[in-house]
Image (cartoon, rainbow, N blue to C red; front, side, top):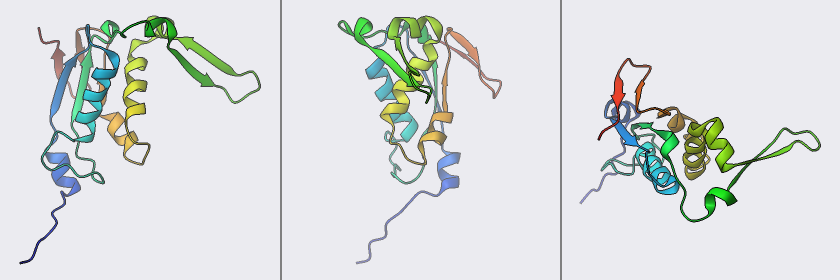
Length: 146
C-alpha cells in the first residue's frame, strides 16, 4: 500500500483565497486578534500546510470599538525605541487608540503570527479600517454587518 503526502501548490492556495469581514465594534482585542491570525494563516481550511501560505484576506472595520477586559486599558503600554540613547518611548493604550486604532489591531495580530518569512505576506492581506464602511484597493466596498 503506497501512501502519498499531498501538499497544496502556491497557485492552488492563491486561487482558493476568500475575503472575510470582521466587525471590531465591542470585540475584545485578544480574541479578535486570534480569530484574524487563524484566518490569515489558513488553519480553518482543510488544506492547511504550515510551510505554504494558504490563508485568506481579512477586512476589519470599526477598529475604534475594540476593548480590553479588566484594568488592561490603564496597564497596557506600547514600547518602541529609536536606537539612540534615551530613545525609548512608552505609549499608553488609550493614547494609541486616540492616535491610530488600526495600529493596535495590526500589532496584536502581528505578534500572534510566527516570525518567519511568511509573516510579512500574511500581514499584507490584513486590512483594518476605523469606520463602518471602507473601500479596498480592489474597488470593493465593504459594509459592516449588522
